[in-house]
Length: 240
Image 1 (cartoon, rainbow, N blue to C red):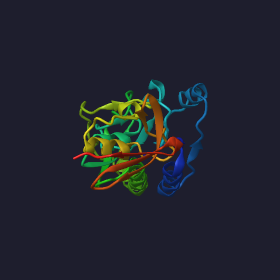
Image 2: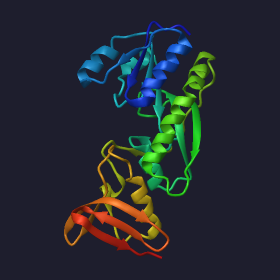
Image 3: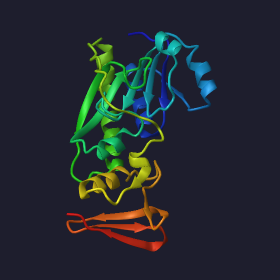
């Protein structure tokens, strides 16, 4: 497995740690590509050939020419083909999935549809938030990356993805980020946990008396669900 160059594009701890792992594995320099303007990235990636590209927490979509001329591997935070696209951890919680995980896959001309190199599962425990799941996924992606490289190095047979699975756009959120008080208790809890994503996405909101208010904090117990809204408004939801 000889590549002219090895590149990594992405952000955050997954990209940083995968760069270190790849440098140790290949015993050579890995070139870090900073996220830039779309046309600049297109111009750069479309002119390289015979290279290995690592995509880790990366939102750039590789074009046909680059995919054809290089080997590109991508990290996705779900068990593909489930929850393709963005914010897969949010959708796993919202859909009450019993398990989630991570996938390292080869990039093809569609989004998150390439052949699977390796997958690792995570059991979703009761009251796991989206942010907690994301952190577990990021750690697992780092822990499994060397195995991914070894599979590629050994020319291991890749798994072809089925065509099933939902796709989620970057700006999509469960019910557009709006809690519906008519939902049953389980659905309300799933929504609050799914929208508990730190500063990575907008906070959940709720309509009260013709006002749309942000949910600042929530508390879940056996008797009720307590919401602290903006303007110091407290709302208790009692559901059987």
